[in-house]
Image (cartoon, rainbow, N blue to C red; front, side, top):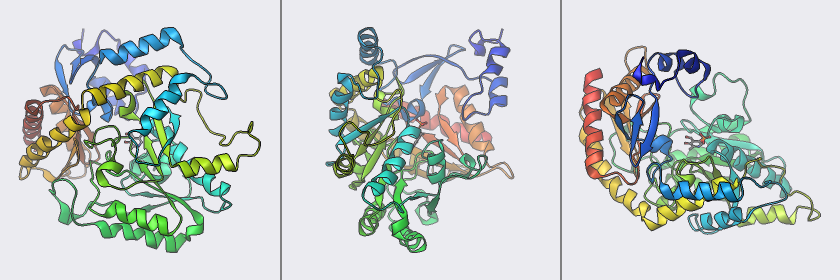
Length: 443
Ligand code: PLP
């Protein structure tokens, strides 16, 4: 028996069409995780694997937190589900209010979703509907950014800017894109690059092209994560904000990765000092324990829907999910937030961010590495492509890492790191050393 299979048959393996996975390769060489604790997974073959990406950027407080498990259990045996439409349970309101403490001032109306992708769709729909409610129904076009990632639904892939996520799926929504902010002069820059704020002025060109009367919103990740950790150039987000204000365009921050600690702050908005109109979250909100997202909206937007809502028994926004504010997800989120606060984990992440910055940039000069970027407790490396096989080397590096006892993410020509907020400096060192070895082995 293959001890990597956790007792599964090949037929069982073959049945599950795995998401964002090279299924054929995986099923030949499975990487199955059977348990987790703190910063470590246990693999099916019994090894301890350091979690170098906090799951998928969502388990910053570490795995199998007893307090969250207890809260989930208590909720399940008290109220397993309550209808999300027209009726409610108390924890959704309690959680909404708690979340506002982490949001920039004014973003104090919270709409619940079940994922980052649903947060994107929700924010884009709110933006379009808002302009209708304001008597400007022509404002429908959406502006994203090349290299942006906003999840996998049709709105998300329309504003998203990673070709591989769109090209299979035919026509998308009406959207246009700003350039990405990866400039050659900023290679190996530590933290936020100095050069590049001028790229925000491209929005003026798109406005001239499409007319602001046709544009609903601009959506960007303050720090682009999936494209390989791209911190915003200094002044870039500020300039986007100014232009949006001047032309009556809503600014949406997709903070699905950056909210709740990854930046060493409550949000990217806080770190970069720019307040959007709508701020999307998910991932770290429940520490990965139960699917949940939350969209924070500027109060004036919510008020517009209420004022224009017709009779008060009428829906103001025909949108929502069966599992919006699921009681168990709310319990998990409330417990997560308590942990983040009590253990001062934003502060901890921000201290570790310096360690990561110092350590990861020591890899500069190593074979195959053409760029290193870092932002908060996140880092991305660009790997020179093998001729004709742009995706091969990051994949091979990640496999070497797995075999050495480290889980990291790879995507496009990058590898990405985002360890739990409860990691130690020694663990970061160990991860980066193993990464250097793995890169040399595939060079
Ligand atoms: N937005 C951003 C910025 C993300 O990083 C992700 C996921 O990585 C999403 C949206 C989609 O989230 P989900 O996979 O929960 O739908």
